[in-house]
Length: 554
Image (cartoon, rainbow, N blue to C red; front, side, top):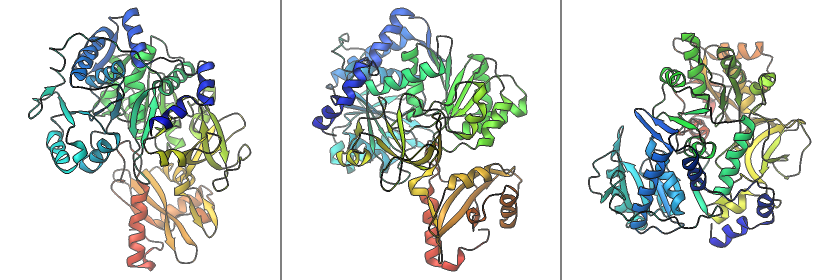
């Protein structure tokens, strides 16, 4: 997005309205962090294994790092990328970026040359911060290859965290130690703050652009809806390189002045230990986190004390899982939420225990956003309860994508973001997501929602995961195919699946006409199933042998 396009969105009539109503508060993360340091400097801000840092310590580290980055030649508006796990250093780097007026670009740690090279080149990063090595990836070796292949990365400066810094001039640990003291420049809440790339489940990843105003509007909405106070503690296993982890770990600690407990490797039993030891009260995470924590609580019979909220989203959450989790953790409000990198929290779940069933069967109550359901083809608004495309407008919606054409394609004439998701909106403001526009199965002219079929399959006691996608059909054009991961020692065949769907009174035309049993689903780093990979497999099988797509188990 060019400066002119950015200015158009930060000084639009909608933007002026958000500022007038206080929905854009004109504050930055650095402003919020400074308030925390002034009010409660010794309060714990972040816990990462054996590392425990107070707000004053994070602030001091961030000022040191900001001074070192300044001395590397960074100018306001430059982009700093980091490809790090959930380590305390990410909170420092994010705050340092806010202090200096630099945009931050988190990159998923498991991404390799193709994704990392494309992201660094697209956002024109000046600095990238990585471990020397983490798990099986040698980041310095990868960046060396990329700089040799991509001329635009020739001047990219590389810093390391928790390593020797071999081949680099600086490490995070030494950066700024010999620099002159940091002097704060003016802070601009309208400036580019975050460049976060979509997972590319349906095509080329897009760079999502946020300002401090859009991000802090979302955080304030969360604080208000969930009544977050100083007594709350966030457990955060979601990667800080995704919108969930970034928002509720790196930003929420300063916005609400609360402790955040990081996990760089998910383990449900360790999560239970941390919840009890650190008195964690809430978390937000994808379906696997909720499923595995629920199973761990069920098998252990353990109480999680004051743990009061688990909001799950980012990937489909089966209603039966929410019900199971609520039964296993009766003191905890369990609900589905809906959002994206472009619009972080369109919904924020449910108001209280009285709505627990709504927390299972819907994706939550709209909050801090205007939502319409529109005809997926014409864009015309649809009445309450009708299924169509979900479009969103509000103070936390991104300002655009890194490419102007992507931005123009993403908004309608009234400024609503076109999510590409299908769903319904009830008269009392609850969204139920029914699928993706690109995932719709058009069987003989009838639109089928894969999610409806998946929800029924997920209720089967032997099914761990299910994904329903379109496969070619000679007469009907396309028809459903079910990919299923079974629980250990479980068995299922096509006849058994069909009998189960019949017992659940699912309409016959929605029955999958093929069952594919797999050991694992192809997924993004955030846990979303890559349905385009499954569809490609079916298209390849069809091309090789059209008659093979019948009623059998593969």
